Length: 285
Ligand code: MF3
Ligand code: CO
Ligand code: CO
Image (cartoon, rainbow, N blue to C red; front, side, top):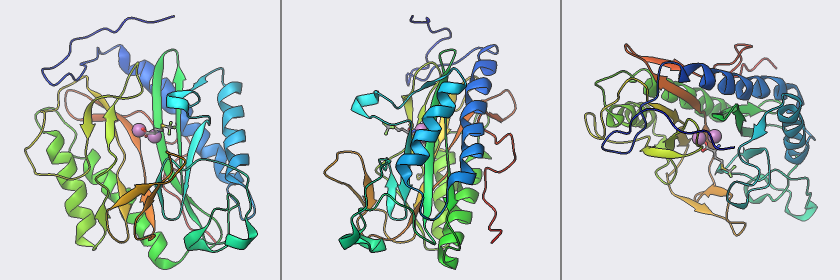
């Protein structure tokens, strides 16, 4: 069944949703965030990303929801799991290649001590899309890795804090870029956030860099993601032969956090807040 869209489009093709639509986005966003809460206990040394994905698919099914990624442009999994120098769209799997068991040239799908990884889940609930990702660690990562994670999380919120009617998408990108670059880290240009709602990806492209005051003006009723990918080294990426996995060209670490957000009359609502309050990891061990 196709549910008709409501609300007008701006001249940039950005949908302006109605007040009643926020509830649908909250329900979808809450489920995606809850799945990311519940998967945390399964992110351990020796676990495969394929098994983590299987558990995520089970949680989506058990909730009576649909995975937005299974069948999307031929993608076959309920999550993207991007380990260490994988920037985004890492494909979950269970392969072990012992002869390539080194962190910088790995093809292993099994998590090792000190790995950092992003898990990205998008679900459809009553036709609304909830899209969120966050970082996890196994064991005790290096100091520079936890710093990258903390600063990427901060960068996302620098962007979110710019969300209110009258500000522009360039204000969001500028806030993220200027924060990340202060620490010598770089912002990935090749992938961006996106409008969403009753569709997975719609205008605008929410880029995570740019000039303050540039780009379309934010209006109440816009729904979009902010999902900065921040690299320890250079920003360039390349996509592997599987046509999905994006890695840093210099093989240094990359981190990402993603929230789905709606613009309100005075600011924003985050649809994908963690019900358990664990969106940002703590390094307890
Ligand atoms: N969830 C991703 C995003 O943030 C998109 C993943 S598409 C997939 O937009 F096909 F790779 F799963
Ligand atoms: Co997204
Ligand atoms: Co996502």
